[in-house]
Image (cartoon, rainbow, N blue to C red; front, side):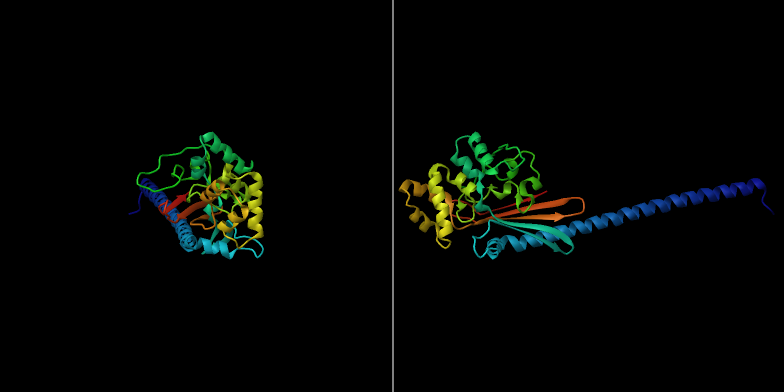
Length: 292
C-alpha cells in the first residue's frame, strides 16, 4: 500500500527532527572533546612548568654559592646575582641566583632605626628613585619558638612594598633590577662586604662609619681582593667601639641564598621564589617559597 501524502509528510518531519537531535548531540560531543583536548594541553604545559621549576630549584638552590663563584670575572669579585635564560624541556625559563646577604636586610634596618619613618627613608635611599613602588611597611609579630636575630618582622617583600607584583620586585631583566637587587627579608642581617654595593653598605653600616671611612673600606677591599674581613678592619684602624659595630654588621661568608624562577609563556609569566637560610648561633635555619 502506498502511504498517503500526510503520512509521507509526517515521516519526513520525524527524519528532520532526528537529524537535528543527532546534529546537536554531535556538536555537543565535539565541543566537549575540544574542551577536554584543550584542558589536557593546559594541564600538560602546567605540568611541564612545575617540573621545570622544581628541577631548577632542586639543582640551583643548594649550589647557589658555587654558581655565583663560577661566574666570578677574572678581575672582579664574586657577583651578588647571576641571571640566566634557558630552555628546559620546551619551557623558556629565566633563572636568577642571588646571595641574600649582599643586600640590606629590612629586619636589621628596623632593629637599628627607631621608627618606621627612618626605615622608609633608608629604603628610599636604597632605591635611588629607580623603583616605581610605594613603600608601605606592614610588620608582623615574630612566630613564637623561632630563634631569629634580628626578629623576623618582615618575611616577604610584599610586606614592604605596596601592590608589588613579582615583576616589580624582581625587575624586568638583568641590568634593570627591582628592589630584590638591594633589599632582603632573609638571612642573619649581616651584609657581605665583598658583594654588596656602596649604597647597601652605607645603609647597613649606618652611623658606625663616616663617609670617609666607608670610602676607605671599599678601597681596601678592592686593593686586597684575597683579604678577609678581619684583615680589612685591621687595616682600617678603627676605634674599638666602631670596629665592634662594623663586625656585627658585616660578614665575608654567606649562608642565605635565593633562586627566582620565571617561566615565560606566550601571554603571561609564572614566578617562583625560593629562599634557603642556613642556621647559626643566633638564627634557626629556614626555607621560604613564594608563588605567583
